[in-house]
Image (cartoon, rainbow, N blue to C red; front, side):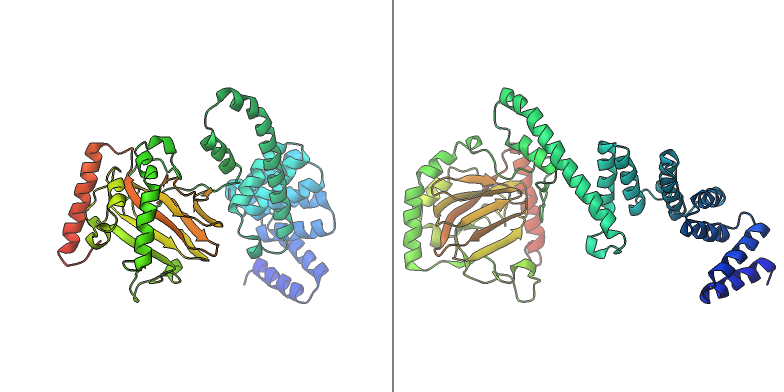
Length: 422
């Protein structure tokens, strides 16, 4: 064992014995023998810091980062010492050194935000704290010593966002008044920017068509053919009540096999709490049911129903029993949209698509993209019923619709070669 190694072993024994003064003397001897010894520089800087000898601690740490500097913590230690010496320029340089080694270092980001806050640079501080918030784990998983600092950073950022939001509201008000028109989507963009709403995208489970904007609820006036469907509400409702009275043809909306993973559907699988009376199912007319509802079928004939063999079109009376919740989920393909025509709607019933939550109104239809996360609930004492059917996405050209139909037919032909449906 050489002399340095022997001294390091002696330091370890002194530390284990609680002989702090002895350990310090040994580290000093090591540093005299090896002026660039990283462990000695670190240990002696820590010793100087504990004794509030900040100038000496700084000198040692500056030597340490010069000869080593690979560990961000070395630079953070230097930044803390420079803060104590009120040298903000050197503190900033040290924090920059730490973040050059690890741009995602949580403590370095928090300390940079703290420095910028002390300097009155509120916008830059908010940016640093925002970066810290993005890389931070949940508070419950954070070391207790670091939690207060992160909580302070998060609180600063949240207040900054509130102040910024209030400023923008005042600033944009006259512009919005001059612009006129429906600014719902623009307002949503501001809410998303400030975290008041989530950003929802299409999550097509089976087939995703690129280039189609993820819109939760479409503008009613874009679907003129809905006028005839809504005008037939009374006749459709009458036919529904007749089949309901007969109590035949309804089946559980979800019918997964016992060997299938159910996830959020366990409670509703094979349950009549959410049931359907199918008029068109998987692209085929259900004659036994459809023949009982001629006026409903006539109304559906005016809709641009998609043709995707084995899957669509689809149309049904959807019944949701009291105190039933359909959990958040997403549909299979954004190449088609879904229409709801409310027929029976007690109070305390609502439907959410992305950030938008609406209550059904009898006879007033809406069109939505079911590949955006959505859910429904009936918290009343009475059942809720809608006519639900799908339509082509209006942004698809005739040529594109033809090819999507052909694709579905091809998928169906391939899967049926083994008697299995995709």
